[in-house]
Length: 187
Image 1 (cartoon, one colour):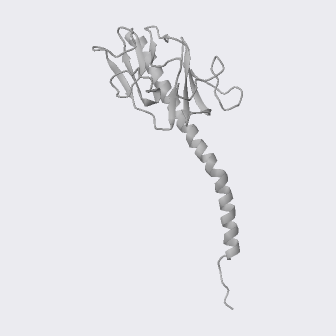
Image 2 (cartoon, rainbow, N blue to C red):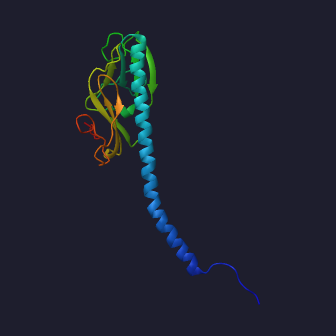
Image 3 (tube, rainbow, N blue to C red):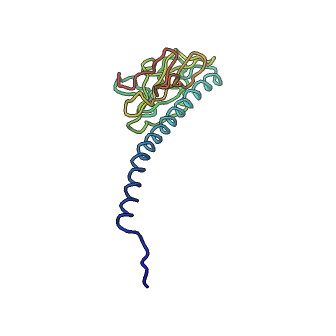
């Protein structure tokens, strides 16, 4: 007797149906994990820039400024340029928040990949640290994907030390000292 091996069409269709259900559950979750991981990377990279500026101010014994920059060689004060367009750190001898002739450019960071954004209403153009390592003022930055506050990350700047915001009330929006992150939207 000749016995055939394999699967029937019905078994194959059931297997494909189960696979499609599992994929429809897994793919959105996987996409959200990728977005969350990228936001964490952006936030960590920006925190590294802030900590670098602060430590250089203390080490050099002079003001050091972190400013938004599109070209990597000058600060931008244009309202249509945002932090996600790139930033630089430089030794700001005259503490004016602008990279002048004779001041040393310390490091350059490139623009973020769209649709990631980095916004701050408290620091529209620059953040400066004095020789004691104190920030020019208090505020926060919001790192967002597609301008969404849900799932965003926050960087909180205090005069003493920067830190990342946490989601204390489990609404997936990080809180700052004042309770809200900076808007992810364009000002």
